Image 1 (tube, one colour):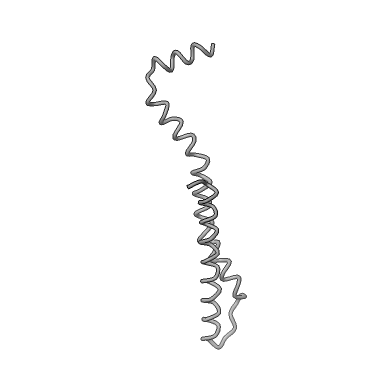
Image 2 (spheres, helix red, strand yellow; image 1 turned 60 degrees about the vertical axis):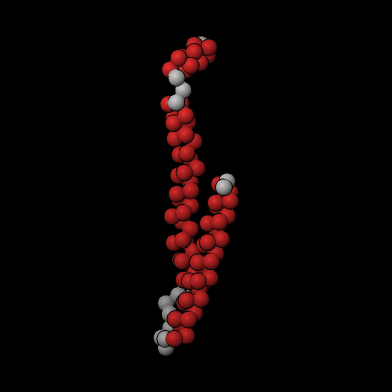
Length: 91
């Protein structure tokens, strides 16, 4: 999967959690007699943020770090003679 597809999937999961949080706040409001502190969609936004923010943070770290990690791993498999030859041709 590409980074865009993963980001779109995370956004979809956040949207699902938004509606779950909003509907649970509405059901709770209808079952109690007191007034809730915030509006229904605020509870939905909180659920969506709690679902999306850690996933997006991890996605950003992986998008930045995977190139660095894979480059270092791939150069560790190249023989030293080839690396020395590559360095000498650059000079």
